[in-house]
Image 1 (cartoon, helix red, strand yellow):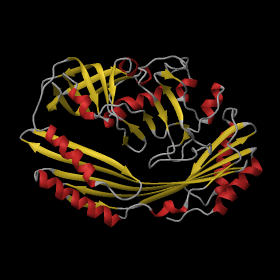
Image 2: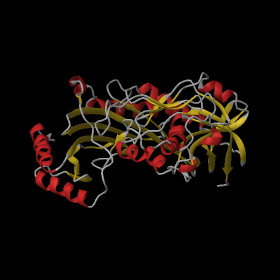
Image 3: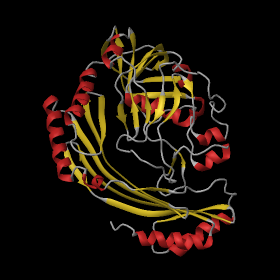
Image 4: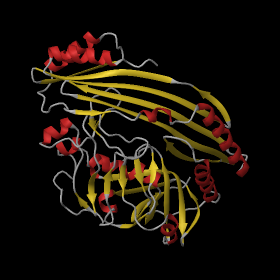
Length: 439
């Protein structure tokens, strides 16, 4: 993939600055190499790449926007942005200014190579078959490189490079009429890939699922693994803490800053400086920072991009991020929950009768702005007298984050990376609604 030259970006900046009062250029180039093993065999690998520019400008006081992946027609790009400004709203904020940042060049050589991942995939399959040769193994590696550049006519020039490998291993085991799929995943930004850690998790889940177990409909203690916390719990906090919904007064937390609403053991924060998705600035050229949203159960703050912050009379918190070449919206990098002191084993041993939620189907059906979740279990286990007795099926768990964190049993002592940008421990809630149905 040919990378756009600095001179092309400068040409866009110069042309747009001649016509508009303020200009912001966002350049994105991505390259992905998926490597897929399916049913124990290497299925395919390929590389796909894309690049483009998103242009925002302020023309006669109004905000205009246009984007393009055709980097040869810069006059059309500028004209399209100006045309949208003529029918757009008055700009309530100014683009970033006086910020320069460049990533260390050493980042460009840290990722594992394709042949190394193929070898790792073959080893993973062999070792899973040493445990059970009947498991059909699927492995997805995805090598991702993303380069971002931001320029403004107010002295911003910032570049960042994010490189990572997403790893997902799943095993399918058919037993009579029962189809059991178990998976585990990781994200790395450099070698080595810890195969032992991944396989230990996967095989342990199969051992727990050897027996079938049943739980009755009712209220029980529910243990959420870090994966389940990310899927069912953390995404709700992303919604209710977003400046987009706070500015619209749609979040139930809009006027609650300073109130203690959760268990004092619960602290929720963002640290954009860690992990594979770490970034020093957001997609508007605003420096990122560590920020605490809930501290010891007390609501402290929200997160903002520039536009939502302006509407609410606040300042951006460096949380303006884009989906591809779209306009920025409030988003988070590395949402984290402070760990507790108990190990996973200790938490499970204290459950007299309850449920472990590991993976859920989809995002669940819920009223996110009310903090509600209702999820069907893709993989879950019954706990009796502190012991995992087997896998449960046809089970749903429902609750509310505001009530759940007021009835907290405990938080685990070891946060894990979930997806690309959550750092979450396991969590046990005292009483959540559990519903089952007969197959």
